[in-house]
Amino acid sequence: PNAPQPPSQVRLDAWLWGIRMYRTRSAATAACRAGHVRLNGQPAKAAQPVKPGDTIRLRQPGRERVLEVTGLLA
Image (cartoon, rainbow, N blue to C red; front, side, top):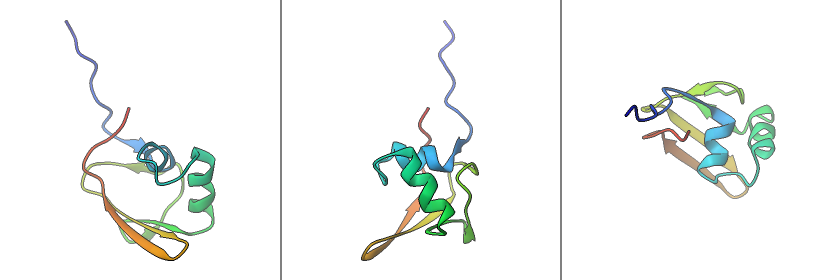
């Protein structure tokens, strides 16, 4: 039987919500719009695709997080 293939890329806002960095996907989208998220050193838009190996920087109240994408969520 054919097993479903994992996605090769996922939207940034969906990935951030999926790993629970934000409580809702719309909160992740708002953070991208506000300039609090950078993808590989560049300001990120919510719909940008992420793939394994990408680096994401998040500014949250009182901290900055640096994440490396090691896997994608369907």
